[in-house]
Length: 382
Image (cartoon, rainbow, N blue to C red; front, side, top):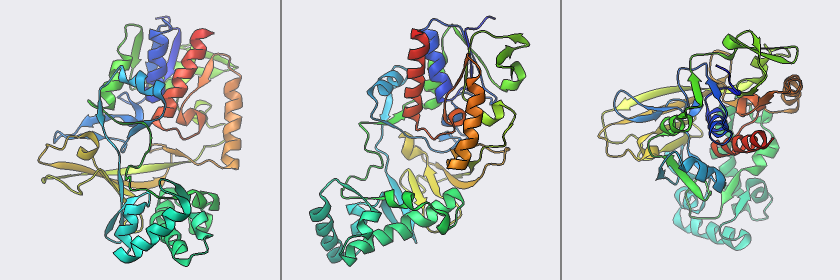
């Protein structure tokens, strides 16, 4: 077939841009993915016990972008869900980010009430105060709160997540860790929060369900595309249409300047023949255990009427090429290497890099959906 656009990758970015180019742009679009499924890391499915699970870890939708919410709402109904995160600190379950409810869970009632009055009077209700600011407070009890958050919620969790020693953790990151002067336990404060009612995979299936879109799975880009001399070849012939590439930027050019580093994750799924494992969606293990968190899926999806439950434990690890890249490790050195790959890509007039891997940058679901919609705007109006 003669395609107007080839999209490499059927994750959030690839699905949204393909759907828009086909529907609004009237284009014929080929979508390929090396995996055997669509939806990228948002892929969800029912496990053998009938529990909807997120195969690549929990993904919670939240956004302030009305355009993104309205766009996705064309393809899904929503299970309204205000995500709350708990932390297991030496066996004590508390809310995170640290808020006024956490304060009363950590300290005795008299001290918690005293601290609450101090925090509210000095910083105001509903404020987010960085722990660096609290550490500089003249009151030793207020400084104690900051130290508790640093030691018990932030430090060891961050060491596990990023594989760093305490002295390697950027002080600027530490400074941004907040204490929230509020009783709102929701992790996110965005206007729109929830989960696709039938799952992410079903939502993206609907986005790709168009007569002008052809999807080929289990198809690495290198099987059908070649990039050389600033020209793109499709099945051996020069391709004059557009290529939207959402995969690894370094992989696109055969790692010419070396591999870009990422953090990866290993997941251990467990099923229990009881109604609940932890009674909530996510518990972070901030000081103990090798894993960083446990997700109990039924509380994410609202599938709480099941008599059994499935959880997943999440273990951070280095990306070694055989596992899945999740988080780019952005620093001046790595960003400089990425810039070399970006310069190579810019040499192709019909190649567009889009998404976490292609742009070597972390995006939430809503942000990458918006970038995809805006790129579609530019391409369609060109």
